[in-house]
Length: 164
Image (cartoon, rainbow, N blue to C red; front, side, top):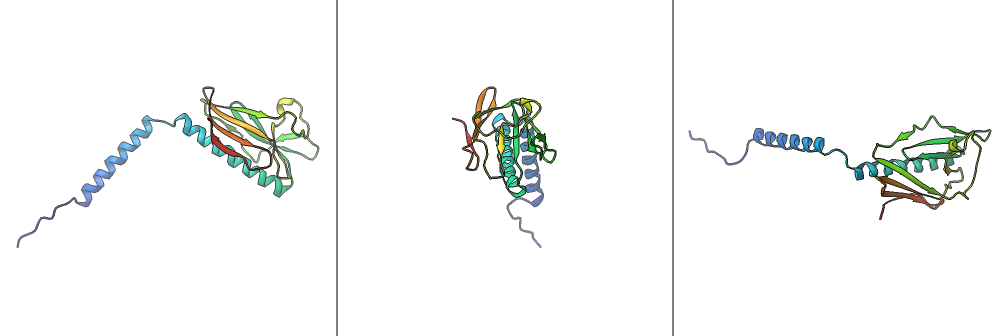
């Protein structure tokens, strides 16, 4: 009885090649960590989602929220019944990776709501129960070069765009 030898690869050979390719791809990922643009996109998406969730939560719970933005971090605040701004522990504060910074431009003539012990303890962006927000432009920067812009006119949903 003669066996015919078919041409092609065995399953084991194919699996070995796939394993080698996967290992090489993993090594490239270790050598090339997150680029600044990828980190900025991730932070921009996170901020956009946070603002959208805060708008929904403000309307559903009939509460006013605020966002305190510092160059290297941001946190959610809420307005209590006495009109004081407090850190909202339901929302975890976020610190940016070391190479990214936030730069906020918001109208100072915007609505003022509530009080705080210090001006630095007040939120710069308001998210109101009437489904409005403060008008703002927020730049996500890497080495003082803007990568992304998150902006809103106060009525429409915020937009995340690549900086020109």
